Amino acid sequence: MEELGESARIVCVSGGTSGIGAGLVEAFLDAGDRVYTFGRDPARLAALRSRWADAVDEDALVALEGDVTDDGFRRRLVERLAADVGRLDILVNNAGVIRDSGTLEESLEHWRETIEINLIAPFALTQSCVGLLGRAAAPVVINLSSACAQHPFVTCTSTSYSVSKAGLDMLTRRLALALGPRGIRVNGVAPGVVDTAMWGGATDLMQEISARRHVLRQEVVTPADVADAVMFLVSSRARLVTGAILNVDAGYTLG
Ligand SMILES: NC(=O)c1ccc[n+]([C@@H]2O[C@H](COP(=O)([O-])OP(=O)(O)OC[C@H]3O[C@@H](n4cnc5c(N)ncnc54)[C@H](OP(=O)(O)O)[C@@H]3O)[C@@H](O)[C@H]2O)c1
Image 1 (cartoon, protein in one colour):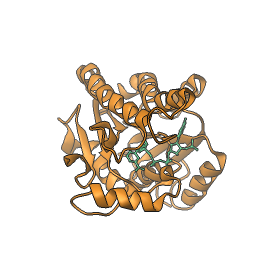
Image 2: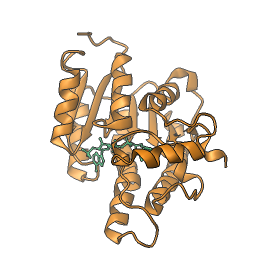
Image 3: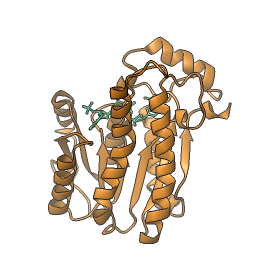
């Protein structure tokens, strides 16, 4: 069991119980950081806690049950961070959903849910955390975007999802502009196809799209590939990088 060092960064990752978020939790814990994460599903939270129970100091990982769209939960999360550690070095807005394929077929209920979780909640969580971020030495916000934000590729099957991520990219730039004077950097990471639960087991479709779009290597991206990009963006090596969207897509967005 590793002790938390003085240089441990305080990190909050939304949706760290699955896929890319779980990969980010792993990367930050491996780096010796202290991670707060949350999700809605108690079974996923229990699995995350037990995966790390013997591997890290008990203070290193705080996994809470909560919905990022819930104002009360976000307030409690910020209060908890303030009471425990009094600052936030890194916020990763990772939680996201894709509900349906198609354009005119999708219900307004699913549209609203997608925009609420993928676009409004990252803004709301960042807004809630600005005070804590302002107390860190080199604060950074990372938004998990998608290749689907950048062009209406036919291989991006959900219109509400693509629109939510296109909005998120503009939010990244607007927040970078607004928070730069406070010393807070804000960047996005845009993966191509990543093998996670988000695909709902549609392995053939995932591999077919990778083969068509991932021109560099026709394989799916891993959560560890995404985590590598995030670890660069939150590091001092990227100290003057803000308002950027870093593609981790093996060339998906090239054409
Ligand atoms: N997989 C891909 O191909 C891909 C490609 C590009 C970008 N991305 C983006 O990467 C991010 C992570 O996706 P993933 O593939 O890792 O998906 P995933 O495996 O389905 O994980 C999504 C995570 O978000 C959490 N979450 C969803 N809605 C939430 C809410 N309302 N409140 C709190 N937590 C919530 C989920 O937990 P609960 O459901 O338990 O709440 C889960 O932990 C998303 O923003 C996604 O759009 C994914």
